[in-house]
Amino acid sequence: MGLFSKKTSGGTASAFQNEKQKADIIINSIDDGVILIDSINVIHVFNPSASTMTGWPANEALGLDYRSIVKFVDDKGTSIEDSQHPFHRVLVSGKALRDNTSVLLQKDRHQLSVDVSVSPLVGEDNKVTGAVAILRNVEEQRKQDKQRADFISTASHEMRTPVAAIEGYLALALNDKVTNIDAKARGYLEKAHSSTQHLGKLFQDLLTSAKAEDGRLTNHPVVVEMGEFVEKLVDDLRFSAEKKGLQLEFLTGAAQNDAAKNIDATKKTIKPLLYTHADPDRVREVITNLFDNAVKYTETGKVSIGITGDNEVVQFRISDTGPGIPKTDLPHLFQKFYRVDNSATRTIGGTGLGLYICRKIVELYNGRIWVESEVEKGSTFYINLPRLDGERARKMQTEEASAQPEIQNAKL
Ligand code: ADP
Image 1 (cartoon, rainbow, N blue to C red):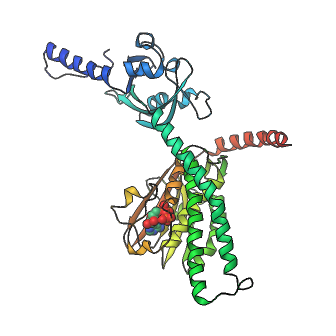
Image 2: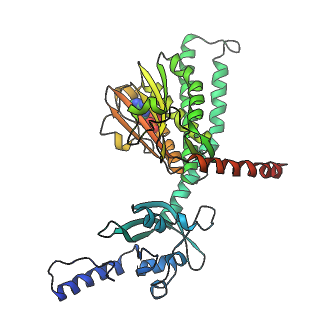
Image 3: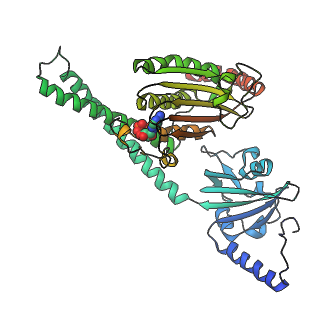
């Protein structure tokens, strides 16, 4: 008990008793599951909501190792490894953790969607002495989210086909070799054509964001050396920047140290190997999206792409000399359908879904995306993805290579 007791300053025994009673009343009556564990994984508090959610009565759970009571499964229903358990991660890292995608495996093997928040308890010598976990039942909310995502994805999928047909016929109507129309009709059809293209892009983005929300986004992560990957990608992107008269700059490793954010960019090697575990197609999608925005919103000047890293992360940077984004808009930028409402961007078409999709993809790889911007100076978007050290990357690459023939055989 001494492990978790808080020092009380001069209160009487009865006042303390009252305080304890009050705390017990709160813990026992709230709707969220509250679980307290110590540093050797033993459960010390297990409130009634925790019992309801896990299916384990408190008198059975108390005193046991949490790993036999609070179990989580991944999206395929497989139990997650002990090292990935949120309680374990907090005990090891000493950092608080939130997970809004967790699924609890109940005593009777049923599954329950929960949001998990775990905070470490830190002793006087900065040692982690335990952790407090709050579990929130979000079964109903996730079901509704899934229904909404399913509806959006079916509707946008169905609507893409007729929209593509309309776009095709409008393109034919605008083709000199096929039709003969006057200038006025051409003007109207051109407007209809570009609106249809916009609609097609909207349905495509809606479909992608619905897939990202319910975990159906195609995702085949492999070990990728991002330095070389981004260098090649920049070559592909160069044309569209230069077509608009914008300069395109690519900086890697030490050359881009000045622009790197919150990381100890390596000073020793000019070109370090920056390995991550991600689907290259998805990473391409994110960088291309940020780059397309940079080009789209920038009238003159430069777009710059940079890549660097420290021991923990690989950091991508896409900067422009465009109109910048007002401070009040910055916190909302990665939300669905958010578009900055100003004269500079109002005239430029877009769906407001691009950055939302980028965030969803980056989060898929436990990464982080954020922006820094100053109006009239330009914007810089950053992405941090977890970095794999060389040894681990090579080991995983060998495993990937040996798994490859099996996949091919399976296809035959
Ligand atoms: P959109 O399809 O509207 O470009 P995004 O989600 O990609 O949607 O971007 C959301 C909004 O963020 C844009 O509408 C624009 O107002 C702002 N924005 C994004 N990138 C930039 C940039 N590089 N410079 C200025 N504004 C930007």
